[in-house]
Image 1 (cartoon, rainbow, N blue to C red):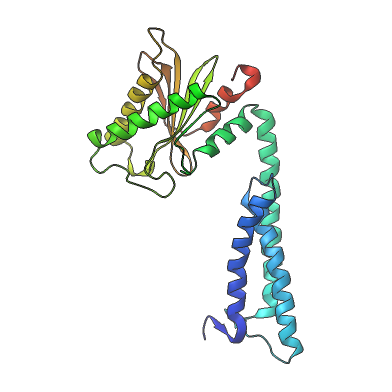
Image 2 (cartoon, helix red, strand yellow):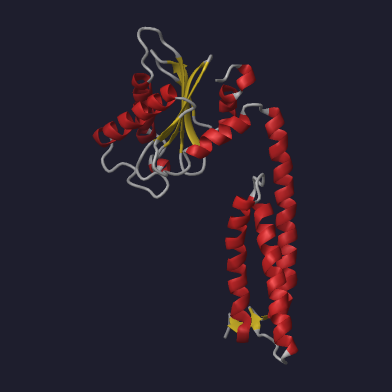
Length: 262
């Protein structure tokens, strides 16, 4: 065949196995923040498996076939080469990650909080205490109730969020921060549609944090499946300043306990 001959299809299976193993490696090996290190672990395992498999074939007088016209046994060294490149990028990523953690003291706590709203696993509201969880729940409920009234169709039910507005609340001496995973945020394009979403989110946040007549500093950060979009900052009794850069580093200071974070 054009793609493989003989037992060459096993090489393709080994490549798929490398990706699967890298996922397990990411869970088992704590501290690897970048996929490059995890993929290198997976490739190291399958490279050894590929070597032993086709060495066994060679011992029985079989070439083992080819994949994309490359003899199966040679794929071992391609796997090793790709693994080394992945490891190099992974190590560089880890070093940059470590440098960023030192540069931004609140980054580690932010990443933990942000990770809680990655996927819907049952709960939709998060915080360090009951008061924060209640505020997050109030915001999430308000958004889910009002979205159909503002948007026809909306973002829909997604695998990551289950159609819920996953919300994390953090109260600090500087104010209240809401991190929000919006279902299918990418389906709300820049312009009037995105502006309407931002306006709705700010209004819901104002109501969720209402605490008598005293206004508080409020931050509402909307994110999609991968990255952040609009970030709103202002007093809860007024209009916000809106950043559309998606720069999440501006949120780190609210999670720095030494700077006043709860």
